[in-house]
Image (cartoon, rainbow, N blue to C red; front, side, top):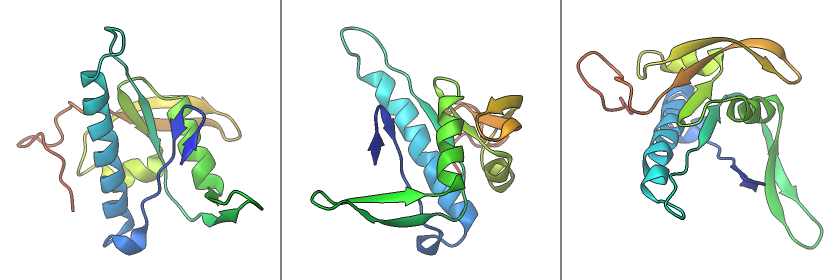
Length: 143
């Protein structure tokens, strides 16, 4: 789903073996976007994106009377959006919930406290797509 200049995606746990596997797929998608987008210059200039990931239970449904659209609502949607908007270009910012699921699969830097609208100060974590993910291997450990 596009929201202005933002793209929102959902990974369903039911499709994957666990919530951490769904989160790993979301991180892999973000990493691919971070690597592909700079390769396509616009007017000779490199683009960079911010990405944010959070997880949890959401409600989804069809809205509209004449033009139908699928949408999702819930605190996880808002928090993922805040992770993107307060994030860093060329990186993916995640909540502690996602960090705790993926810390053995991806390398994160603690960002300490970030002010998040509606939540106050939160400790967040940042993943840079070119960072070493494990001591032996720099490729994502996907399910």
